[in-house]
Length: 148
Image (tube, rainbow, N blue to C red; front, side):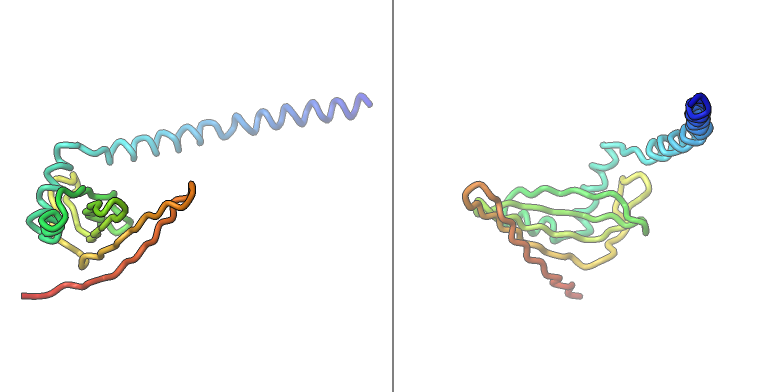
């Protein structure tokens, strides 16, 4: 019986030592992640400049506002290729949302859209409330681009 207690005791000591062995590695990984996140912090003023620069390069964004009224314009974080997604959303008819998305290439500090990478994609989302459940109907279509 004493042997069993001794083996369990040494096993728990080993487990404790193994946990502490990887602590420096875990701290190193955490510090690397924090540093990487800090390097990509967003300056809000530069982001606003980036959105403003989009109106000149993406005329559809202003056309949506002309047709439906004030819209929300925002830019998503970059994907693995460095492209971001420009989004324009407008709500109308009490239950519809029109969304336009365009892939764009941004400056590293998000202060300007350098070029439009893809053609606009338009989506209409209709929300219907039945009892206490909200149903979202999603329709998307790539309308392509027209050249002048």
